Image (cartoon, rainbow, N blue to C red; front, side):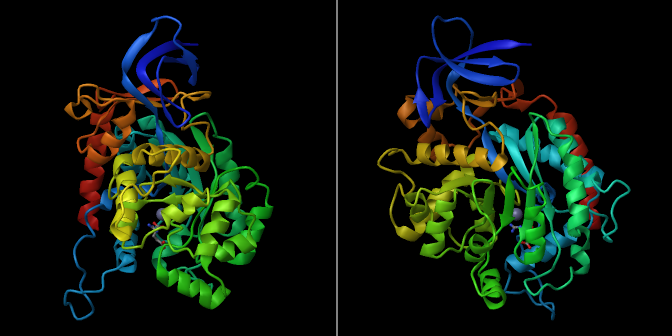
Length: 460
Ligand code: NGQ
Ligand code: ZN
């Protein structure tokens, strides 16, 4: 098996940069060792772990930018009421056009973009399971397999989260016509998960997701959690993104979504609560104490007009966060982390809100949290450069922006001032997938994406 020794001036260890450290890559795994001599390949000045992306709906990448116009209301006048829910109608119309080959082409392009931006693992919250009319494909796993193939094409790690979707609202109403292709009974869903588990590898983990409390009746939640297939794997759920769903939950289940989940499910470190946006002080403390990850997707949450997560209070309660690019209106850990902090600054009218006494650098603090939380939500040994899968990023030494930056300021400069991408090289499981800013198969993957999306957009 191949063995490599990599040298850099500053290597990210235990939440900060360390000097005099070499990285040993053996059979796709990474170990940090003291630099005994100068043997090995010098790869750059700053080396950091690959960032996990804890929330993705890959197909939505191809509609990014197509829902930024005011919609027309019933009388064909331009509406002033565009919202998350009107965006969702556009998204459903788009989702209705996508088949397995389309999904593979879109996801592969997206995953190449993720790698180039510095994400080395993606959690795919996948609910586009069936044909548009709701009938299963000949192979009911066809859409899941398309995502697995796309991740292989690109060389990114994948946490596939087949998603249970059963009802169209808290009142248990049936799925609408456009939601039919998302739906499963619990038994069929468990068969899908079970079949996919056989494909697990160092680059593929199969967890589960519940689309939302709206979409999963309480009895189905119990059945799923009792099944054994949820035993020791990542469990993700959309939880409290919109005020409307908090109100519906209160009206029907007599509790707020996070409160209800904490009261009715064994929420622990396996769980990732995506868009835990609307929290009371009590929910914030309880969620932090549960050990579950708060999955934050700042660019999508801004784009959809969701609201703002109480980041400072959650971190003070020792809560764990991670980031995702969700609808892929942006594909960049830099932008997610920057906007996570900027949202807080805009409402609190303070600066450096996410930093702490222990880590005064805002960038380092955010970066460290997102690595830890993202790895936990992915269910993979990643997010670090010691005793982990060999995923790493090398920042661009030649970037003028990093001139004169030492270890103390490199991450802050990258996250807050980097507009051009500063990620130069990306390794996943011991293999270079991006070198000099280019992915080895980017042209073929982009050409296939163009062909597919040009056709889809014409039909949509
Ligand atoms: C989704 N996306 O499932 O793709 C959701 C919208 C819903 C985000 N929440 C649909 N960002 O929540 O019903
Ligand atoms: Zn989502």
